[in-house]
Image (cartoon, rainbow, N blue to C red; front, side, top):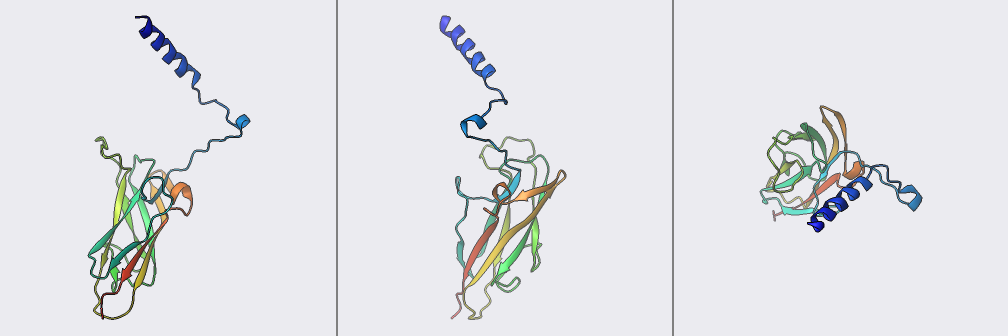
Length: 175
């Protein structure tokens, strides 16, 4: 019985001692809250993603965009295309134009997210075989902006260029 009482008292003291006013500055440390952001998903704590290597006849590639901090509203993410791959000749993305497009990350529906993934959506790049010997191509998809009902949201990890651009290398299969 004593152990239970000591455990409860110890836990209470621990909780009372934890306040938001704990000053880290005098120890040479500072805590900064990162802005809410959208970025391409990367494994673990990686700050970059490896290029996707595929071929003209590779079918499609999914580029996953996520909101690591979560969201309570839908978020529209605008993206642009660049590189040597030509929209409509080497690739397409449903609903996009040669300049780029947008994808909507839906707010959670209230059910628990058991897989541990942040709210996310895919940009699906459909690869096209052009039957022309024209060499390998590169497609860069860059997150340009993001908005929700609450206003603008930073793009790239923590609002930086990290995880802001995904690269798809497309190998020419025609001989």
